Image (cartoon, rainbow, N blue to C red; front, side):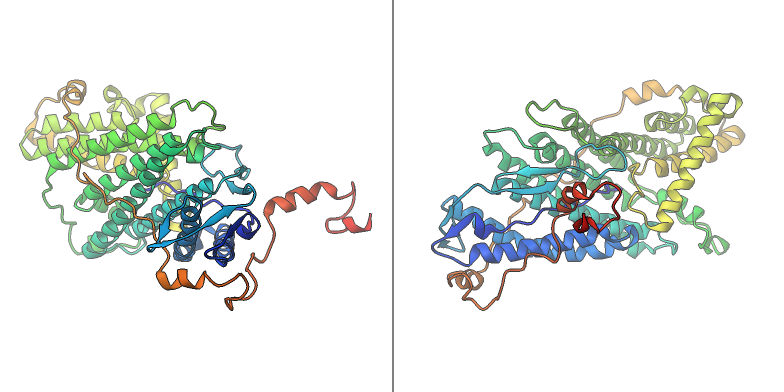
Length: 480
């Protein structure tokens, strides 16, 4: 499943205090209004319970879509560019001062991410567009949640959910690629690891890997069968057994290997040393990327096993499955049959069962943390189901020898891409009629006062907390 990103929040900012336009005087004020709306939407989204946040993503996406054209118009004015064929002149009167929360930077458990002080409009663009990419990823997660809902989805609902999620992930990947190409113009190191070039490259590869795996999930019947068998509300088993059509096993295996290669690239980028950049990537993101790589390789082994079983080589198929378990990081191949006969194996089995039950509860509650293992547990369940079925058949009917898995894993081919050239991201621009209204002097376009939000920065509350007298009750600092 896509990574559960946390949307960052920002401090207040009035562009009119730092920028001035001789050709479009109302543009800084209009941009300030749109940014204040976005800031209010992000703060409200952060305070919602986890189960209510997916329904609010459409409001976040709308606020971002409204603000980005104004922000890019200011950037075009500073660089002497044009918007809708019209020249815009913007002058920087003094250096900007703004703050964004670095949600990808590692922080102590239980504490909020630190707020990074920024002094450039370029960093504002990067954080805003990165928030847009995170929103697309979270929208993909919300569509995929229907696959694990209490009501088993139909084939049409499953196909629609996967197609929508794939479209959002490819859009997120293209946004990260756009930012990566734009960062090539920088001459100074990134102020935070969240928007550094290696991190942007890793996020683009990560979204590409997730979209590639969804192309396999769309036609993979086995996860749906396992999910249906664990669904307490499902009654279809009383009527008929689930249908498991034949799949293009070898093709799916190579697609999974391509996803594993993208995930490995993302992991390498996140672990890369970045001189001059403060902080390090969040441990949850690093663990997720490694789990995604393991899941993709384990899934590839499963499809190689299915291909071998269709060819009548049940023993080789079982060896592929046990190789897949080793790729997932579960019990060793040579100890699979004796897992419960020693204390260490028994503890590993108990820990895995407890983790699976916790993941099931997260899905039922709609928690933001569900799917944080990148589908590794789900793939392990599928492999366990097939291994139990084929071992029983091999012991009673075929009696084929089971070869070692190591040589088989060494023969895996290279991956095959399915999304060779994702559509490049095209930033939105202001319409001509909207831009024409910006020619009016500030305060004379009938829009009234600039909206700056309904509350101050959260950092203001933190700063004022130290002024309360010792022993005083909260809120009575003015009496001392």
